[in-house]
Length: 518
Image 1: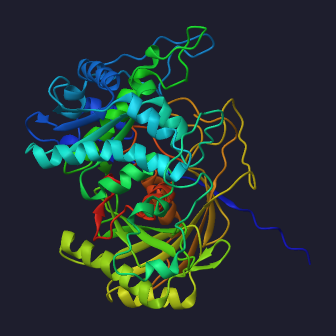
Image 2: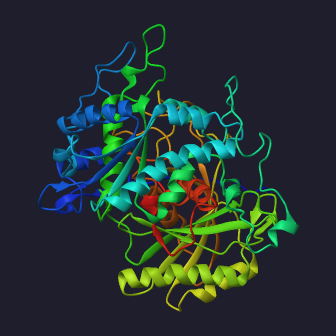
Image 3: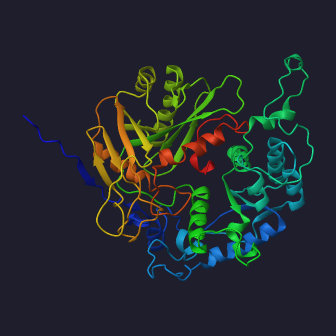
């Protein structure tokens, strides 16, 4: 007897709604902010205390950009071949009108540094030493201000010239650049091993501290400022593209249109300076907590230890980062597992913080990651959770062409489409055609996420419920003002958080707001 092959169920999930001021809802952050304003906006316009660090020309560019940000910036007219109605773009009405915050571009705390000092530092032949020297120029200038000035700064803006971007990233080659001798040799990448001298009580090893950091300017600044204030990096070519032209008279790099840049910058400015995010999910179940697990190899660690951390996200949309214990957590090329003691300690800290914020432990705690859990690790997670908390482990992996879904029409599969393989596995298209915008923003046929419910403590949740949660978590990236992201925030920033936490300049400490890492 021949049985009929089972057919796979395809479901379409509704686009999650966001909540704004006065409890008003919208599916698009730009629409909601323009019509209603941030969901927890103050009654009065709030002045943001901004510190700006850059070269004299960089600070001047920011002043001019700040004035435009306050006035408002229209979307440019469509170019050849573009639609007349580009619904994914929106005029920026102005910082006060849209976000209810303001600042005086002429009255920011301006810290000027010399371009020639930056250029000289970027030419030190050892890249670890060069990046540290450049970062020190900015960091020392800020610390001097903090020692001598009583004004408190809510957010520091670093206006970065192109030579920093070109020469001070981990992947920078600095080919053809005339280099100068520093304290370390050009090829040295780790601390010098001097066991006889290191045993001496007065032997100073701090001269090589920069080898504990990955040679990346952005990560170095973020790590250093975890104990100071949130930061925002701005390339001069982003805020003043017309001031940097090539021989043909065009900007040296292609940027987003000015209105989109304004939306993204203003969103980050609000998120990093105000108590609550600009919007939140409107229909997240009460008592639910989402954790994104982060593992990152410690650079130049002699024992090959790994840093572990957890990102906690709540219904408000905001997040907290918890640093776990460093240890030998890498068990295979792509596998990481905590010891039972480290797993229990990390989740206990997360639940204690949640309880302090909400008065009771979570009812459901979802752990999102890109790897699996072993028995000892999972048992420790369950022990850390109180009896009323159901812990669920969910694996979320990107795919690269393994599965393609096609539909009739000019555009690809609709965002929110899911292909249910069984009760524990499903494909979810978080990227795709968005009817509200009448477009698909992407270069090729979108690939889905593969979502797997791995384990649970008390009861297995419905797959549709898990997928709806993931859809919601793709809409709370406050580093931009896009309609959605392709990854949930629990996974989207895992690498970025890990990159900062493994820096030697990232001091050990308790839970820290997620906004410090963006």
